[in-house]
Image (cartoon, rainbow, N blue to C red; front, top):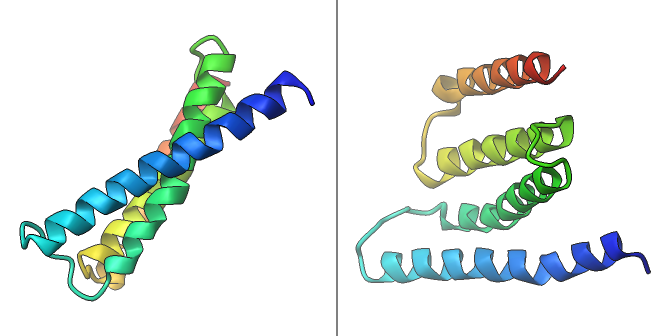
Length: 117
């Protein structure tokens, strides 16, 4: 097994642990009536792939000596997109009103793509 595969396997438990801690804290705040999400509490489980995407961006940025490579960009755009979807579900926002946000995310991704070229 090479060092890269070993490094990735070591990161998975840390990513899952951080996501579970965040989800647990949010559920605790919900149970204490500090925050309220209504019926869409299940959207919090989207934090797991969001955390993985952010850690992937961090890992790619470290490997590229701090450069904003396409791998970093794609991981960040994925995390932002998932975060928006999670927020729409959690707060019961109207998809019909929120869809332009995805156009904005696509435009920002294109600008970053042109920047890194």
